[in-house]
Image (cartoon, rainbow, N blue to C red; front, side):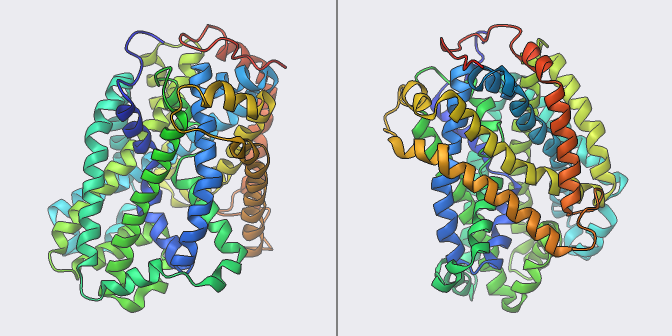
Length: 491
């Protein structure tokens, strides 16, 4: 690492990584999933998987980045062996493909922030605004705008990422807290709190509730994406890995809880009978159609609607920044200078994001395929850790500089439990997709079909396996400054 290429403090690292973790999944997906899974019962399963999926995987990612000081491909090649660089390639490819359409989502948030500020959402029907905007040339413009804002931050490297995180993340926390407080003060909001925090024990017997809780953890904490690994490259040598992982995991999920309180208390207070409709509205429908409707019926709703879309825009942009940095870091490992690497990544993001901006079926297809790919990314992290030696990773990397001791329970979770969780999650997603459309389940161009995942995933994996030798050569072509001695896993 060149001089200055590190976070200035633990606070800077934690804020930047929280910015990566806290995204639209916390604010638009979490409340809808809670509402569709009996509230308090879901929260129990959700906390369990925070502890046995998200936090352990975060430690693996921190350890990989801290040990190797390389991006996803180089870290896998160095720790798991040169024959497994393709696994790191899958992690990097999945996060980058998500970036291509996540910039579109970020653009949507900016568009609605503008509409809230100008009063457009108060004057016009939100459904009509959405129908006229989604999949249009205007969505392509906001996609480019969001990508440009993230590009400008990553241009300045770790220093830029940290400075922006120090402003946006505390501001985001305040905004979400203000919105949650406003929601609980509405007449009838207690019904939302009761629904959200009262367990219905019989619901915990449903496997779908547990699998939804695992899915939510896999999506909204960022564990297993390779994003934490990328930021860990810039952490200080004696940084406390376990404490950071717990702080980020619980900090992220606290933001989700506040978002859930904000949305569900507002729903139960203003339209008690609308919960089923909102559950069925989907992420985009909830955020860009239903929430403006609800704010319109709330005293002072125009003001709070601005705060909502400002918070959503901040969450989207901080996550987009981390995805842009991940792809840029991979090219830096290949020998590119930062700004040249960022230029290539930014150009690719602009071009490959356009189909999702202009055609909603493409957006939904890509969201489905690469969201499913995240479970495979988590599995690959666990398998790579096993190849290096999970207990060795715990002793040599995670325990170094740790004030919070981590026992062999972590070794068991990473070596055994997480692979089982990942396989179960992938199987459930594919089975649910098959049941949704038994006649067209093999359609490779369908929106949410098994065929779309299998065909696109198989093509990507075949290409990565074929390119493994070159991936190793490019990602390990130069020494990683600051890497610990003995990082190579062999094989």
